[in-house]
Image 1 (cartoon, one colour):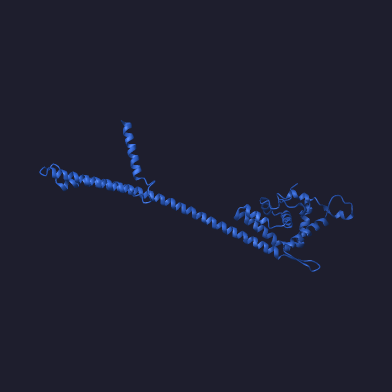
Image 2: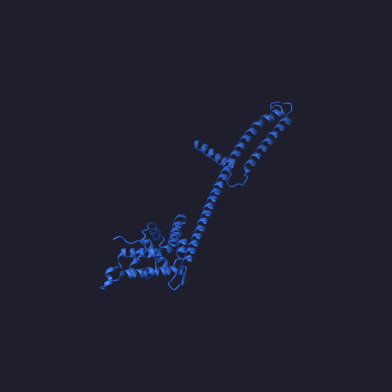
Length: 297
């Protein structure tokens, strides 16, 4: 018996739940209210028919009371119950609608957040392109005049600077054993300190022209890190702008000025990896490219 009662209650609850549920119905979800209206109309009509039958079948017998009193006494409680039940259904439906509204608002907020992120991303990308344009303007503004009055512009100047650095390195160091008198005043080419001293001497002569160029490289790499999280697409795009002569100068600049931040950025982005060894002062320096720093002994 308890199991039968529990089964009846469960079945009744399932019916009630399906009656007030908003799932699977149309957007207005008026079907439960429609069936409630039909049920109420059927009950009222049934009571009316019963009252008419009782009244006309035995009009002299008042066991069922006056026509209006019987009808009102029976119908009023039914209508009150149906009204309460309809109110309950309305509350449930409104709750369901509010839940759907919250979901839509959450989706709208999420879409708005994505839109804001997309706009921020587009702004960051636009900022990167502006930095690239600024870098190219700096490169094109470099000019050199040799002793014969011949002017060199733009990227060709970088090649001249790299050649000057290489020539200065060859003039100040010795490659292997050398018993000449001049070799007494030269340092061993494989000595890392020799690289530092040669580049510092080069920078004293030509650093003024290259300072804006190096500053632009540092700023752009910092921007790629902070605003674009080193997006590989933009890193490759930026690196593709540089010739081997430029990469060699940037590499030695990071080595000699002891700029830990620049060395780290060059290392993280693999900026100088695969640089042609012929552009290095020594082929042995190829092992320094990954870290962009002079190894500690």
